[in-house]
Image 1 (cartoon, rainbow, N blue to C red):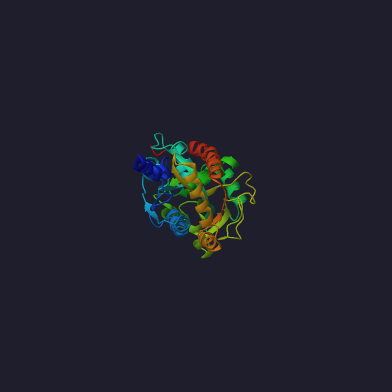
Image 2: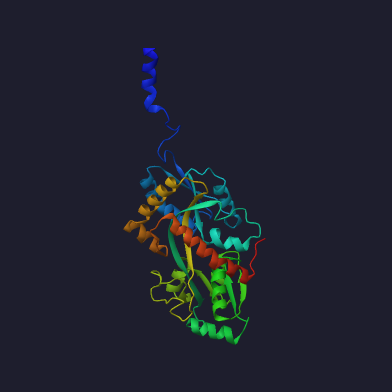
Length: 322
């Protein structure tokens, strides 16, 4: 009996301890990017990767899963174990725009995921050919009103932020223009330079060099503030287009059901990784000028507002992928 009592007492400290209760994280974490290597989103993911790894004490592996307008990556992560070891880099396209583009979306951005952390945002820029007769947004809008539906604009494809940035301008100003979608932003930008179209909106980092080289003329940026890449270019609001603000945003998301304490730890790690001066400088060089240092609920509210903004724009544009 004494021997049995001794065994029970020795085991007492372990009674009720949950199996496999190693502190999170105890193995590498995968960050899935819905776009190809070399894309702006991929560059941001790989830029934050070292800081996340350092803060979490585990390797963060970036894995690219492009295709399907982001559906391949989002569906993959939605079906992953909700344990914090598989994350996805979400964006306006995957958490909002796709809701209007696809009649049968393979995932639900608000039900299949939990927000982790807003990372960064930037603007698009309205450009025209370098020798265009339009030297301001006001002049372009006047031409659109004088020639309803006659002027053409390019984009990198139906439903892209390039396309919808133009649709917002047309909606606010009550004007019309013909949309010419290309198979990607590079082809669409080339169309502007070749005078195949009158104007277009593209990501500021992708065209700022061409603007500085005099190959394109920038009329305005779409964010609330001027871009550090083009500090002399006004915002759309400054050009008199009231209510016009469009940003291109990125944030971390995890599968629905991920424990709140794990989400909180990931959020804290992301915020610290983004908070270094060196990291901010790297991202600003990429054209990101918006940084929100907040809890997961901040990204959740942002996503809801984004859905309310983007889905009506998609519907107005008539863009559909399926």
